[in-house]
Length: 390
Ligand SMILES: Cc1ncc(COP(=O)(O)O)c(C=O)c1O
Image (tube, rainbow, N blue to C red; front, side, top):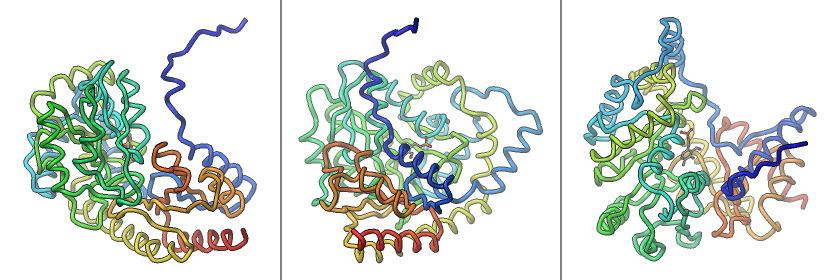
């Protein structure tokens, strides 16, 4: 007899990534010989820079395979602090930096240290879907901060105040943002941070797409060192699979985070930390900047071409590698549109329903410009052909 033990109620509340079902379908189509163009997953085509890979290999060869301390290697925490100072012109005490298993680990640690049952956390809609699930994981209540297409998805103090409830303890924002690519407005963030502080609340700013923006990057820490910042080696540094990120906390929070980190993870991956030490060398930084130039060329191309398909690029996509596109009411829902498009053309996009429920999500798709320009051109040509044939 099967053991039908009950499972936690959160299993029903944590939704799958719909794009993963499209990724599976894409893999089947590729197996059948179709030339698939992946614009769905948030992972650029660039490999991890060679110097970083070599540093990882050297660490393994030297037998550096034991646990580090829970907050990570001091040397790497210091290198990150130096990066903040040199690149972002902000002083961050290295002792306030915790290395984590990806930005995902940083979000989980921060929330575990901040909220619990009965507490509410504002999460943007559209926004990164895992945030509301991370809030669920610590038995708190995700509360939507609804953004509006006709207001360029802007997040304003007025909207934060309107969404704030008596049990709200804080909010999670991202800049640059997934899926809209928008960058927070400095003054607005300063006003939000100040007001939230007056409510004894917290602001988490997820900066994992930092460095991937049209304008020079800046950190929320330059506005207020009471802001909790999430970052990662995944995106700008090209290290998605190494699972290494970081969390910057105010002074009074780091000890709690350390205790959580000791218990939840013991330590971040040692080999990844040694590899990441090479991420800040001038050669690697130069290579990463060349990649960024290429991403901007891809962005420029799509910004020009997509409107000719009758697709409306929403908001002001100034960063990350995403465009959030309004495909209108021509389809019943963007998931079936993505399925049809994939089956007919081999082009994989992400349906809006992966990013929230409150913003007419079924009318949007996210395009990740994570393939070289010639492939992007090919994708646009196929989409055009598909739309004309409908
Ligand atoms: C906004 C945002 N935050 C966090 C993450 C988690 O990334 P990682 O755990 O690879 O650092 C992602 C991944 O796509 C993301 O888009």
